[in-house]
Image 1 (spheres, chains in turn green, brown):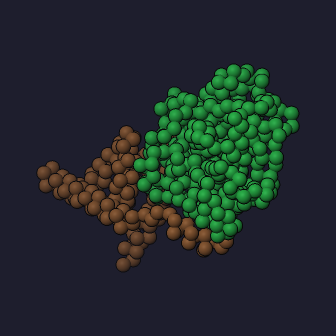
Image 2: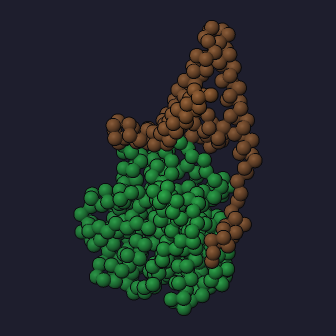
Length: 322
Length: 143
């Protein structure tokens, strides 16, 4: 299902990085080297990160709360703790979203739909917290559960994007709503392999719907497949859909310094894609970019029930206008 | 694509674990820990005249307390990531699992947080340990 947009633009972004175990290779707008951000728990810390980025983007774009029509937000915590509890601080209508690590592209998609239907300005917020995710999806924080080499490491931080109806230099051109894909893969340590089939399906459907070839895009940027997941995706696209892509990069593989990629497969979480897109990719000379956010839809309960892991990917096509 | 075929792709691309290295490290560290604690027990027995049975109990208490303190200081998870099962399988792992879960839920209060979540990992060890002990005791009694 591909939707085309006429009046959807990204005005600006405000990024915040919390504490990260590994050195992060990019410079955000704000860096807070504290997992708690002076709050009682890591969950509340993540919530405060979101509040900071929403205030940050308002200040950066010189807008007031009254100018914003809708606040679209999502994170990885149960019942969207961080998004819902940060939204209560702002007098703005709110929509909460969950697609795990595909939340960022999902929020762009929903925001664009709203912009096409009369909204003027929208803030799309997303965040992730390494310790909150570890606690929720894996083992207690201090337990330091053993990691496999294919494990990805959730990046801590938050990103707020301001989308507007008025013309700016980044246009959201179209978006494809992904299908939930499940091949029956069960290894919750290997998200790259869990999510690659859904990324492939979404890319295939997007290209089919728009009658394009991969070469139409200067770059296809996936969310957080990791260094092995991106290779699996290329191989899978070739074998299953007969699509050969060369111009493809993975945001999760680029967050942490390369020297760590021997022990972990890269970063994960919904903030990888916007962080790399705005702080790295858009500074280089790319014009047409297809963003493919990838999310694994498992929970601790689903894993305990021996269910296989379904995944979803949403694609958003953006154009840089100079 | 069938799952089997997909798994082949995944396997051919993903980096493999150094299983042999991990086993070797775990064996050496676990063994070293065992040796040191045996020496401690002998020391307690010979120098302080504590009966050997009681000395072993003290050694276990020492292991549990020291690993809990190290976990609380935020130090043990880093050691575990190096030592792997060498420290997870012995009593140290049990204490570590309990303390780390307790720390996780400390902010949710003493009753609903620490109290009810402390044994979420270690609970299985206790339950099946007790059940196992019961049946072994029964077996011993019959024989």
